[in-house]
Amino acid sequence: MHMRAFDYLRVIAEIGSLRGAAQKIGITATALSRQIEHLEYYFRVKLLERDQRGIRLTPAGNIVVETAEKVLHELDNTQKRVDDLKGLRSGLVNIRVSSSTLTTMVAPALLSLNDEYPGLRFLVEVSSAPLVGEALVAGKADLGLTIFAPDLSELTLCKRLPVVHCAIMAPSHPLSNNTMISLHDLPHHTLSIPNSAYFVRRAFDRAVKSNGISLDPVFITGAFELQIELALCGRAILFLPEFSCHNYIMNGQLCAVSLAHDLQVPTSLDLLKASHKPLSTAARIVSTRIGEIMTKMGSNQIASTRALSL
Image (cartoon, rainbow, N blue to C red; front, side):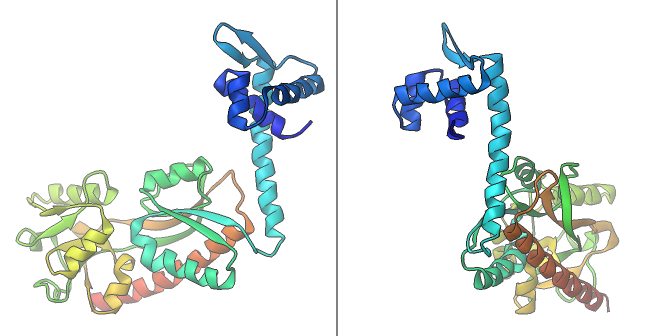
């Protein structure tokens, strides 16, 4: 009996036809039927039955398919662990991240790891905070890096960086020399903020409402690249974590001004994994490297905040 026979059984159940399943798998119907016979002989029970709609699983067949999926998943994890013993000569790490972390957190980590482990491969996808959590729980990602992370019991926190939101703008902006920016400074300036699907916008709206101030943002977008471009051109004030614009600030292209208490949005940048899924050696190394950069960025953020308050 071959392990692939379990997957064959699942395909037959999905398609409802022995011939159709054989075509999808790429073997003859006779060979497929023989594989199922071997499974039924091993379990000494019928796994398939035919009715008016075609072939379907028996109750015993359902149990076998459900158990087999778990076994095959564990075998896949075992293969990853065996690959780890090869000295990280190969391996794929799937990472879901928020766009604001790409240039300052993710890119430096992966570039350095690529130098050390050229056989590793990295699949990086940009997602919202809820989708990061969903991907981790579903086993579609190894690591997630996002702010406003969902509070799910199925997730484990690998690293946390408290986040300070600032007013981000070009050095030529009229408010760039302010030591602090409050709600009362904003009505006469062009703003760029995301829509209400973003947690930061909801927090911002609550602050505005509680202070009885009316704001009319010109640009409403969650696209990080567009927001940065609007600020670089001197056209808009952004409300972003200082770390997300760190490179631009260090190069003198943008500046960060502290926000008054009434505009503060307390949150954190979280590096996450699924609680039920152990990290492979490759994913652990990626997690450690990103965590190191988060620690360094946290020190820079504290230093910047102190400088802004002077």
